[in-house]
Amino acid sequence: MLLIRCPYCEEERPELEFRNAGEAHVARSANIAGESDDDFEKFFFIRSNPKGIIYERWRHIHGCARFFNAVRDTVTDKFIMTYKAGEPKPSKLPKNSNDVVSK
Image (tube, rainbow, N blue to C red; front, side, top):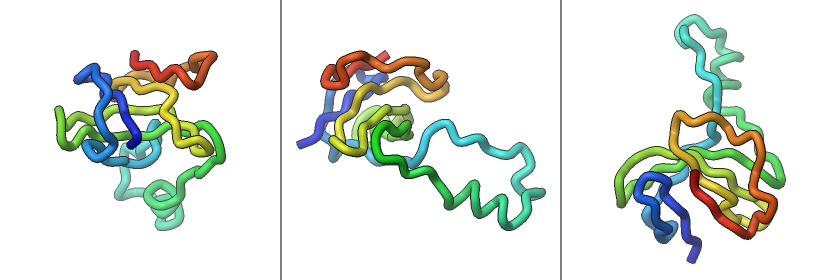
């Protein structure tokens, strides 16, 4: 079973307690009603789906219920690190991706 570390609870919990909430650090328009249909479609539906490192939002639904961000490798499905929502995207990642860390 995959274990995910919640940066608020400060403990690793089974993946069944969490829900993926999509890509992290997506810039949202201040005037969403003024967006063209094409721009709204790109914002709402189109996401990068890279092979490798991705930044995602997660929610600890069966725990503290808070949102947080995670850095995950889509090839190995391993979480590299987690950090609290609202914190900036990490400028550098841990050298050993096998060491899961929480800020």
